Image (cartoon, rainbow over all chains, first blue to last red; front, top):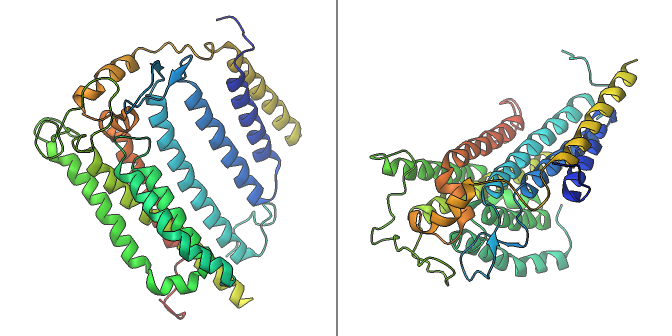
Length: 117
Length: 154
Length: 91
């Protein structure tokens, strides 16, 4: 319960999410905005996996398994689903950027603000 | 927009190994790390290598999007059909554990794996693998076709 | 004016994130008891050696069904965005 500075993976997750939020707020180029969203997805997936680690654990598979306690299997199953959802969202966002460039000729978020006819 | 002769020859040599590795990871999903999603991603990356090396216009003559969409829909229907198979007890019931086809039960603890175990899980793995292969290949093919046509018109 | 408001809220969110990272449970000792049941009984109930695959397809099959639907919808959306009108050539 006391604040400990040995949670280095959780500090890495906080750094990734913070950098991603700063990129999303302050960039004008649309492709760099998509890169910020991808970094946010990576941070959330890392958080899900490091929630379920047991000290000196082995993989939760029984085929020729060595000795030791097993890590938790449920967060790994949730991370699989999250990775596939991230791929689907990135594909849709890049398709919309290609169509925006075809219609207005620039990928600047300030120039294609108002909806024209 | 084909690439040079060296790239085309090497990708012709590498493609059977990549596709075999993808199908191996799908089929052994219940013994080793892997499963439907991971094996489908490996297979689709082999198809993406082929599209980059040979140009999307030459690939589109043989591998039409219509056939890929039929493959994806059949994968989804097989998944839902297997989920409805054990509807007598509950929706996602594993009705093949204990029966002679795929129903051996492994001894508890560490053991070398037996491939005829797992109940309905290897069949579900194959259905999801087909869906992911067709879905990711269609996304890469459609985006490559759209960007190459705008290069030709400019 | 807008940039200072955005900077203040970003500072608050980053401070809360760092506080969460320091006050969460120590890394390596998760307080979970549900997974002990799954590790003990997965081999006799489902019949596989791979516990992660049995959790994805058997104990939590509904999440896999929802995710297959998301993948199908994304592929439909991408193909629909790049379709030509009937007056142009091809297709």
